[in-house]
Length: 290
Figure 1 (tube, rainbow, N blue to C red):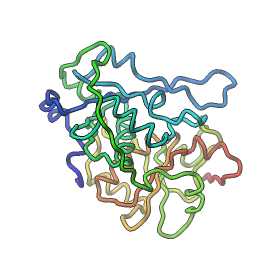
Figure 2 (cartoon, helix red, strand yellow):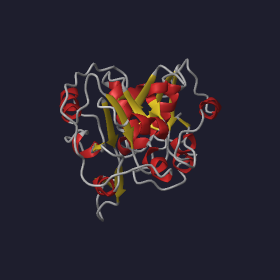
Figure 3 (cartoon, rainbow, N blue to C red):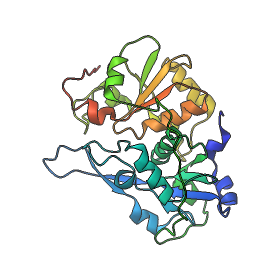
């Protein structure tokens, strides 16, 4: 792996969780159905209830939509400005000299999204817990209940890296251009446009290839092997000499693809932050189906 420190096993976290420099965070969010007649695809609900029922001892909680997203847009989970993120991460004790471990329930996509956000801000000392809380609990490891205890505030100084997040205009300008591959992390039925979608028009961004995020994770919620992931990307003609733009429905599950691509040694990686939540609802943007 390119960065073995970016992926932490349950055994490793169990051994390091008492280190005063370590900051552990549950990043879970759930989707509730929208009210009847609403034009939003879902209502994001922070996983505070399940956190308080059981979490890794000492962990804090990060609410992506409530605290770490742009509140000025109807789109979900969009990156806010750098100053906002600096203040938010600092409040939770993330800063110089800290080691961050991110986990979530049900899917690792919430933890990989926060990992990608931190990476984009120049913070390289964050890791994803392989298998998330599901694997931790399945192994019978210790948990605690109740609200987060909280970490002491820190100083978070961002050093933003350009290109980690791109907008619709950038994606539109790169359609069917040599040197770029656009990767859809949604399932095949959504990619082909044969299954109704909550995001709007069915289909995909024209010319995009399909490497579903779910195929990069094993039944025990851990990441698949590097060899298996490499084969899946290669079969979709995703290669290291190309600029890679990943997307999904809300720019969350696509970060599983990005995490694996980064670990495989890909350098030119971007996330389309609006993803299909923006693209499928705009009739001015082209869409493709099989």
